[in-house]
Length: 136
Image 1 (cartoon, rainbow, N blue to C red):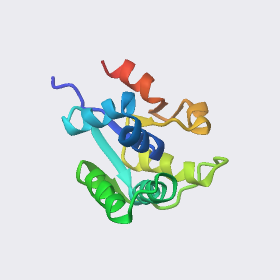
Image 2: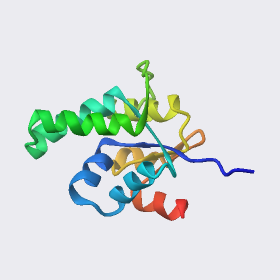
Image 3: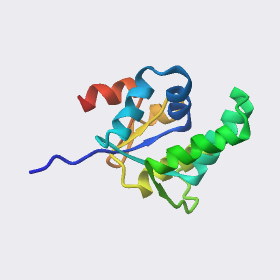
Image 4: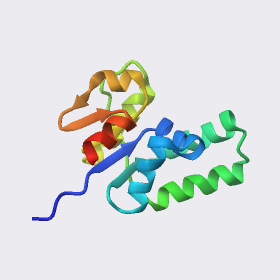
């Protein structure tokens, strides 16, 4: 039997950390590039990455657009319907919805509110280091 390739959602903070600080988030992106895991994302996450690149990292818009195009090219993009999971931060609803719609095994994040959930149905919500420990 062929082992199932894990489906993961990287939260915005994981993509940004991978781009700017390497370390564990970058290892996760390398696993996506090597097709060892499947990246699932949504227009919401892509837009948030672009917005943060420009506003927080002073990235020129053309470069931010290029980064988002690259993430899109290595990810499956799922549509969101605006499901409400009753989370404190409405943006977290959209990230969790991306994982649910994308039938993900993992939601990888540094967001404390999401990490506190620990999981949702069969989706494990983990920090990058915990994901890499489980994925070995």
